[in-house]
Length: 260
Image 1 (cartoon, rainbow, N blue to C red):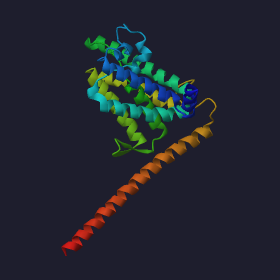
Image 2: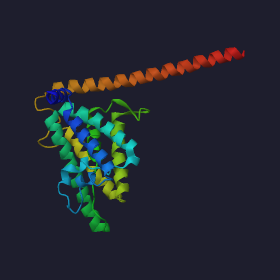
Image 3: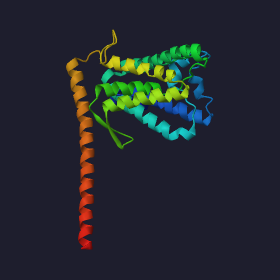
Image 4: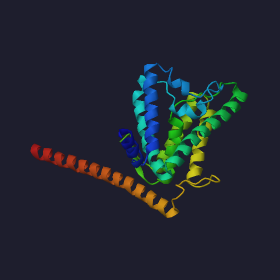
């Protein structure tokens, strides 16, 4: 009975796949931390194909480094945010296909880049683990749909969806270019982000960004509601800032009167 209730609540949440993926990732990270990485790395992808299952399991792989705990929390929260929104738009089955599709696409692009890099510079191929590349693709998908929406990075810096998309591209470009010590590899790490952009605007042949049963009018209405929500969040944040500014001015005027 308890299991049925849990499954029912999971389905009603609107983002069951996101919750399950996060739960698996968190469990793998915790077990990897307790086993000093030996468990989580069994899910990684290695360029010598010693773990062929890593092609689809590497997003769940983890070193379990406790020193990166804050980054892990931020990554999980970021993934929950963009994945939940995309899952509600796509539907759970299609979202799962998109999740693994972009995981494989990112790996393929990086592997092609590694082959080219190896021909030119004789460097090792990519080994992959973690949610970062898939999260970046989901972020770009959200940003393309919400270009004008205002969000606050780290709850401080207000940026539009368009700017957040370019920031995401920069994080991947410079991050993976540094990891593999090659700007070329950084460029190839970004190619699946371009594919995510084309997918959302309907330029990938045979694929559309929508539930199979959703009409364009329904999708447009949902996007407008989503944009309106983030605009309201931004408006309230500005109102709070204005009230705080006025409060400080008022307190400053009272201090000046006391001095007089």
